[in-house]
Length: 228
Image (cartoon, rainbow, N blue to C red; front, side):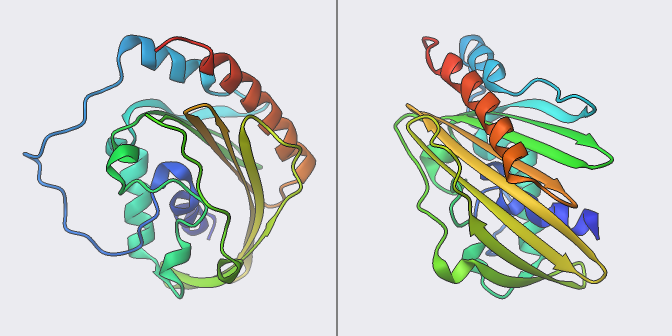
């Protein structure tokens, strides 16, 4: 069940886009957005979190155009395979990977794991300031069928201390079968850079999420100062 919930979690992250609608496969011959320059890559890497104590790097860092990242594509696929009662809620309050400016934006993704849970972080360098709208009220509670298991999601906004130019944090409880998980999500914007972080575990403490957000914001602030 943890694996099933993790698949849907990918659909909730900024790196995973927001479309739950079935789409045709991409044409292999289609042009691929250029990879970030060496300077842009260094800036994006510097914005990523260091390995948290007691955790290991499970994935990445992966760099490239946001829409072409493997993590983005796998997240979109996970959402499309699930049957959401409210498909429009799959990417609410997240970046839309289907938007051309978002899909082509340079990005970096890294994931950490431990027995107690996982942390996944994405940093996207946009051409202009962009920040998603808040989660719609109707998306605070919805259900989805994930690999044949009904999963219920309940989300509340957290009172996280302000970060960067704009910030927002949520805590989602996912329950399915005999398993359950909590998903803490944070999004912070500084200038044209956006950081998205997802913390998944049996229990996610808001204070711990805020501490990670503080560290991530410090890295983002330093990276934002670097010249393109």
